[in-house]
Length: 497
Image (spheres, rainbow, N blue to C red):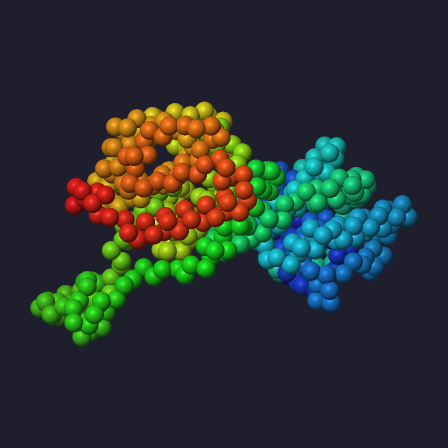
């Protein structure tokens, strides 16, 4: 397949044509397709780079150097067909030197050995090249931009030099000159990438953020971009990496339990013929055959979903100004670890931030889809109004219990200045099992509501000052929460049906 004739002068043809200037060679027919995927993601962040730059820097970030990796060499045949002026040849040599400096970075050498999703690579490229692009004063730099196709046939067998000669290259030369002039800034941007944050996001490449697989089939690129550029997010990522190795040893719990052969546990729509309910045979032949086709026959089964199928783990994380600094790092690292631990044990998890209101509800299903970028990058400037928040929460829990018969374990991660009316806490305790995690400030405070909780943990300020102390304390809380999940007493809800 080649680029259609009606698109020979299109944005696609221009971008494919720029690949004639590429200096990074890799033996993979999918390299242009991946570069196109990175281009499309970067474009959604408002950055419109030439495809050859995206291709070259992206390959350096994702492919280790070596015999089976990449090599730095110009496309001699393509350049000969283009016939650039001498000053442009010198400019391309400087561009090759820029790529060599990038390749020599310790950060690049490390991340190139990690398997990263295309969205994460695109955000890294934006972090490295975004400021350089924004400093380029060309009024036509975003004209005619569109998404590139991700069909291998579009790029296979295409001669880039042929398309390069079909458009005016002056904007490309102008950007190339600007790019090599920004060498120090680009190199500094690479060195500022926090490896722990990238590694944490890579650990969840098979999970989801707000959407589907990995960091999300519909990844929120803004959250991802913010997470990679926030010092606070970097601190949370560093702390989370201290906790997660212990949690990842947990085996995912099965959602089904098997009962002894001397009794049946449930009625199912699927089963063996010898488990068919005898009453199903009483139907007329035509009706029976229709029920077979519609899979409406009933069978006795020895298996059923676990009794805690409707149990919901609900995690609330205080995001008010009182949680800034070490308390925020501890709270979010603990929340991320707790989410992962409970999801591995087979529960459904809901998570929310709160301050003066309840923020967006994030649902983590039993597949373990963890909203890592959102959790790392969320910021709030709304003050606090705990009465309003917990009254709204009470109404939500009431509906969950009344309409869906959900058994809710509510984790509240907050600070010592969180003041909730005792009667409101008592009302919440009738709707859910309350587990409080209270992070104290440096000064002493009186905790008014903890005696009304079913279980609580207090983290004092001195614990946060010690790296080992805060790690051990967080892991202890996660372990205790896991045990409380399994031992949550029925009398915590005395009037549960």
